[in-house]
Length: 263
Ligand SMILES: O=P(O)(O)OC[C@H]1O[C@H](O[C@H]2O[C@H](CO)[C@@H](O)[C@H](O)[C@H]2O)[C@H](O)[C@@H](O)[C@@H]1O
Image (cartoon, rainbow, N blue to C red; front, top):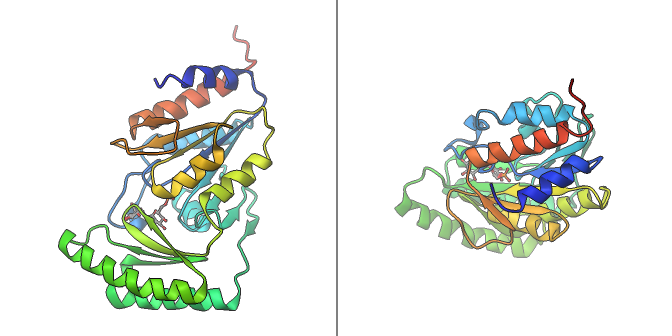
């Protein structure tokens, strides 16, 4: 058990509410060559559903995936709130959906980024999202990958400068995003909506989760989820999947037990 967990469990036992924010790929699910074949680690869905039914914890998925595609992939009951496309879209449990209204220049920039990615990558390696475009190189042989990345980066840099967009590297690819949308924005908004005395935590693995760790600061527990440690802003480090399952089981246990009397 990581040392900070003892105090967290005590606070969860005593608190009337809590906020648990979770990244998806690499944290709740192993990486696969095809994003469409990704499934969460066994045990994750039942823990998320148990937390969802236990109303004291607000569970929120904060992901680079489009929010609706993650909802369809997981099919949880109840469905958690999902902030998709790195904090640009918000899909609430009741189905209410918000996405930013992009100006025509940004839309044109993303269109160009999409087509210029298709010049250098097979179609299944290019992911068009509501407010971004991701180029994936997982599964492409190492030697070829460097050449593809270099060429795409050069083309995308020109597009980004012209249309006021930004390049965002992530585990296994590069994404063209709209500046201002990132996971730290989602976390900041969620914290604003949360009672400051309620425990909060964020679990994530990728470079894109670093903005979330920074936004959480000392207000809650930030946890890096990775097989091997890397320099990070997170306060703690755990390895998937066993330690992630243990963390979520601990969270369920300590929130479910509160104020319960057993014969
Ligand atoms: O923020 P996350 O929930 O971690 O999502 C990050 C990206 O996840 C997906 O791509 C990643 O997972 C794929 C399936 O394992 C893998 O093939 C790819 O290499 C990974 O980068 C998703 O397709 C992206 O949209 C997300 O941004």
